[in-house]
Image 1 (cartoon, rainbow, N blue to C red):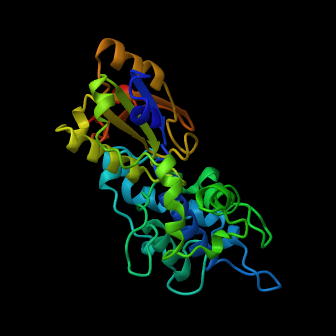
Image 2: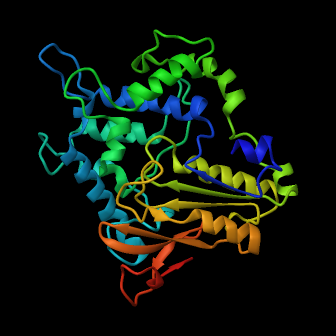
Image 3: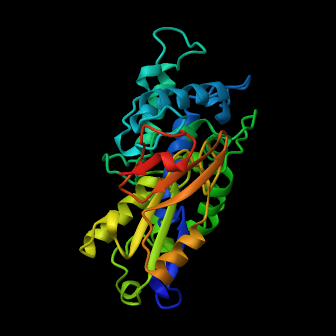
Length: 334
């Protein structure tokens, strides 16, 4: 993303996977929001200390993933464990709320409330949105989702990537000046964001939504992003593409400057119940060298073995109604 903006004549084509466009002033704030939200409902040990990883069991997350699939999987014409009509997927975890005591087939009210709050994105005390919301998708039940948001530690010392990687990055890099005493569970959503603005001025790439020089150079930008990405919300990348297209008098679906390919089920840069193996390099070469803008990229997966068109936003994949549901040729982008 920086090369498209600061060195726009270095490359004719750029591939950006799950771009960290506002890692300090956005995603890291959301990491603190979710960490605090999920810790607040986590069970305690004998000393009364909460255990973050146990806010949701693996069975809870599988239950949630299956519930999202039940609500949205069939929208694309095939029940195949993937949500291709992701833009039409509306989901409320309230459908899983237990009528009484917590059971294996439902979620406790506090779990439902935490999911609504976490997926809604961070806000300050005035209700102002500080980052984007998160998409409901099948990858919620994948270990890659858990590792970032909840971790696996069975003690009161969490090991989620939010509480280790993001906490340390915030303390020593994102805050100006650095604050070695910082704890992600004490982030103040009213005052702490201001401490991250200086870092964003150096590394943030979300504000330049014109790419004037890169466009004049004839550059092409291809973004791919997992819909189940747990650290950078796919809705942020979609928002950027929408702004970029509008400011250049284009439609996102036919833009000759930049396109995004959201990947159903995929977590951060890969993994998840997704067709997460795909060749973006040949795609960008064909676009730059042969003037063939991509309408889709063929992805493959192994669980189960299948291929799918990964469609350029805002088009989405739909099963044609004939042919093998596991073959990309049976699907269309529309």
